[in-house]
Image (cartoon, rainbow, N blue to C red):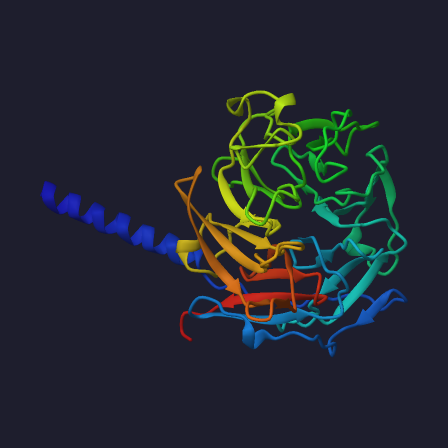
Length: 401
């Protein structure tokens, strides 16, 4: 009788586990989103882009399409619960809301939410409000979903440095409810006098007079970060310094385990490369946090996300997708891919896989696209922005194909 009871319990547990697994992977359909007609709305349902999707290679059963075209210099993205996609840019002056109104898996319209802004690269959405980062200011568009046709903003904070070298910002809200805002080094390599440079700060946007707190030091230029959904630790990409040759130093993927940690810049790069100009002014190598993973030299890893949705196979769960924007002055170009960082448990990177490649023609060394940011739609598909082609791609998975 005891054996039967144990067997029954085992079967029940197995069935429950399978049921939970199926529930996690159940299909979530894209729902239509109704919007108003307004002067700032543009129809992009028929927009086209000069892209070469046939050149892109993905793992089996994955497919990539253009989700939205006519999104100039598309950079950082943030998404509402329904699937409204807000997009910032660095070389333009506008911020967009891009919407798939009929739920067919392709964007139909874009709203120009603001223009005349300075490098409005960073966007973050929380509690119905949209936040936009310029070089020195953080803006808030209140109740944005109900004001797409008549958007307005207030200035939350306007005291960040005005230097434009690495002045564009990626922003996101952390588990603590604070807005994390990096301040890049105002140079290729230097030792800034002000503590706020080469840092990641955090800001309480609900405070009457918010002031940024430096959360991490020694960060040259991060344009992408996310929090591990299992541990709550913040992970971020960091672009290494230039002018030390084609292969030195590596760009980095870093993990923050406590506030106040220092990640080496400008004294040490990639964990073990002492800077020839400023290394002697810093501490020993052991004084700084080593990278969680090396990203390769000069390939500019930007946007990154832990995959938490249910469309992709379970082997991608809690993996980190990273958009490697691509090198700008390497004699043989590198990057121009979307990579996946695989974790052992929740803390250690054990390998990297190339998820999408083909934006760069290796033979001619000509690129036709540059991935910037990665983000999940509510159905579990993945959006990838491309600031060179001015598009947003959508990646889907279908095991039946």
